[in-house]
Length: 258
Image (cartoon, rainbow, N blue to C red; front, side, top):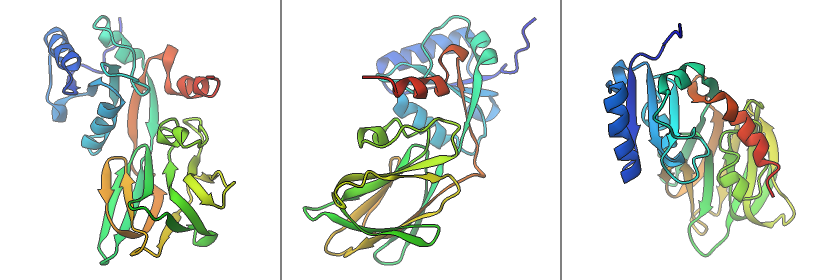
């Protein structure tokens, strides 16, 4: 007899019609439980909804199992309304840690934000950004000129980081990707792989003339002068994936796509 450790399920959906209708059917079939009383959260939508769900319930410490009712669905399992309980019980756990961004703006205010995919710094005017990059209090690049830079987690390495020609990182690798965005100087620098224990500091040079915005996933901070980024190792986010299509396999497969 299959042991069901997920007796109480909370379904959350994106606002797309397909996701909403799927949520209604699944709630009727398996019953809906409030998130604070649930054993597990089942997210119905795309990757955007998965990120929103992880952020929204980051303090709940509940496993999240996604089913794709969106477009790409890289972080989601295939959608099916059958045998859901069996799939939840047999699913493999992946634990990820978000990034903690501490950003200081030009009037001295500090902002603390979490990012599951990446922390990015972008220029916001016609002038290229000028950035000084330090790792563990040692200056590694006195001046990077370009559109900006990002720091990505393994989970986020296949998202914006990959589009910016950054490296794909296996989900269990203790690494972070530091990837420049359209670098002008130094022109050939393509970034670095850093330990997940590293503390990365980015100073915005000529911040008034060359304003920069910092973004932790979807949280924005304007007119930053300094941004510090490190892994929040005290926060554990648990995602569940079907054994035949787990996140390790997806990230590995992504590296062989043409």
